[in-house]
Length: 220
Ligand SMILES: [Mg+2]
Image (cartoon, rainbow, N blue to C red; front, top):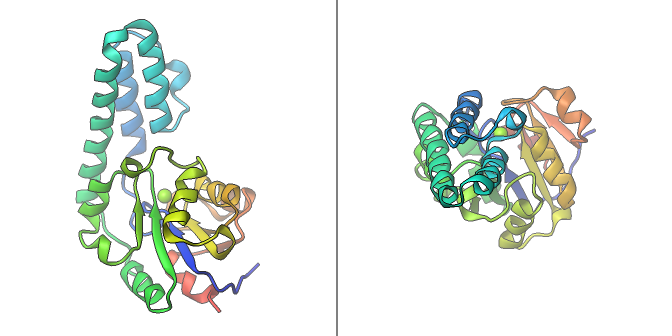
């Protein structure tokens, strides 16, 4: 399916969509599991979780056992993943077409935003002049709820002043498609990151593109 929709806003995931995905999530999850295990609570059944959910699950478990350690653990775990993200960002690069795409969308009066579970410092490391290219940058440290929670995208669209039906969510992960569908936007999967076309189709992506820069091809 192809769409020719006069989008008023396009919201992008960051890693694997606008920039090369180079965070070692396996390493990050292992580091968080080790931090949780350091408080003497079991971690075996937490292994399948995404890292932010793993940190929250660890917090619950630790708070049940040692009330005084909960806040300390939570701060440590977040500092740990931010450090890994910022370190990874030092070797990160925007995709070649990213700046051109964002400039072109701006010229056409299409608003742009980023919705990411990454932290702002890591984005600024890869993309120092990011504020000149995007209208809203909704990193995890700027929102209470993160993807796949629909409020992450809902609040971003409110900040842009664009209703979901006039917006598209673009991302490389099934979670990006899911948050778009749950919020009522169009959904566009890209193949520059985490997932294969079949996985993005399976969760219902309206369109699959090789890369984010190809978004220009589906505008009217
Ligand atoms: Mg991604």
